[in-house]
Image (cartoon, rainbow, N blue to C red):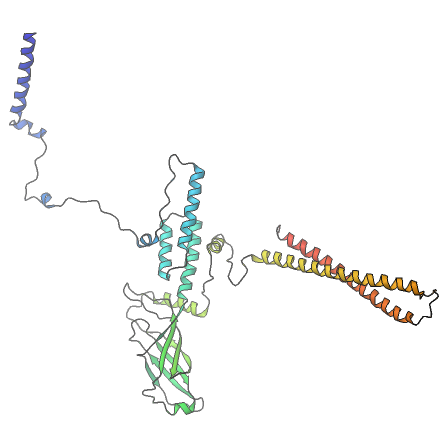
Length: 393
């Protein structure tokens, strides 16, 4: 045992010595970690790189709608479907809420594309949001133009008008040029200085803006020019000319769209999401000027309304017929008592003629009311059947 211990100690010291000696051995340098780069090397000057975070899209930053979390490993399909349906409903309600600008609705369209809706839902959302954009662009703004330059021609006494040229091209938000005429009574025209007519000018234009670059927003879709002399509103006729701008990029697309709005060929239909979904499926929108029920709903409503009215009419006529029938029974009983029938003892009674007139009148009214009762009753049945039929056709 003593010999074995001495052997172990000898082996330990020999291994330790070999490790120390390897520190200075060039052949073992490759097994060591590579040395640091010199201080003057390019790699030493490079800062430690950090993970780059992608910028959040503007649409998402303003959307405040979380993405739908994928189905969990231990989540049942029916639970995931219920969660997805609720998420989709909440997201659609937020996206279609009427509380933003035209640009805000345009951002929502881009945001909807990021949320991962199915094709049909995304198409319907795009339809309803584009309809909201048209509604915003169609709003009219009236603004005074105190710096507008006004030029008047000589007065035409026959038509009591001045030819008119007004421009405010230096305006940085809604420049315009207007050419036309203004009607002014002769008594007022005599006191007008054509070089300084002292008119108050305002313009009415669409809310839609032309944006040739990121910093410029111009209202160029003019609808009307308003001209006042003191408190008097002057009658103006004419049209707006195009304003020459340095950058006309996409101007004609803007003009075509705004001209369509001004002419009424492009207008908002105040669509709901359900309307938009119907359009996306190839159907027709339910305009707020039309029934949301469609022709079947209208037909059903009209049929049941007429059926009810006919039923009431039949009931009234039946009641009236019953009253006339009671009158006839009373007249017949009176005739028996007095014996004024043709073969009765009171055939020559003076009351007989009066009785015959009363009896004839009551009989006529009875037949008429029974006829109307039958007509109304049949009509009620026909209209009721027609109303029921709308549920199946």
